[in-house]
Image 1 (tube, helix red, strand yellow):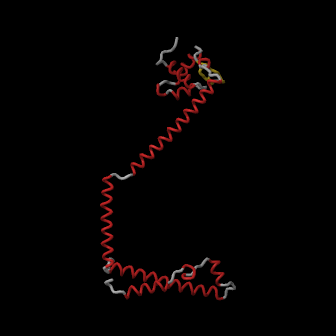
Image 2 (tube, helix red, strand yellow; image 1 turned 90 degrees about the vertical axis):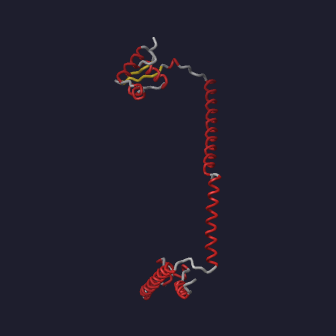
Length: 227
């Protein structure tokens, strides 16, 4: 007599047949936790099924391994296997095509979501017009000779620049004194020694002139404050 569909034997039998691979009681207990079956009940069901020859089993010492009876399954012949392989290949291709189509649709949706709505376009246009107007107003003031920088801000920048140039001049002088001392009695050629140490001069190597910055400060000091 076949076990009732909701009995422990029926649940275990169905699992063993579906898996169709060697399992032990612990494997079955772990997989069937959702049925609230204890390991002892599962072990009993496996033994009943094995005794009734509903499933096969082998003993390995104290361990019992259970397996679905293979004679209940229809084994395909070579022609059927080839047909199944072809069906599998066709399904795999359909799956890949479906994945590709899905990716294209997702990309199109993302592209559409990134586009601005008509309302957003109008809002962006208004903001851009305001920005253009603001820049045109500044340009008009500049063309008219109006100073856009506050006098105190300009003075602060000039003072900071003067301080930096002073530090530049001081360190340049300190380096020259130190370099002259090092190279005065050195057997090495100063140019080769410079290259060996990786030293770069302002104008010769970097193209930066201390004098040009001094001239810039002097021009700023001579310029009328209204400009």
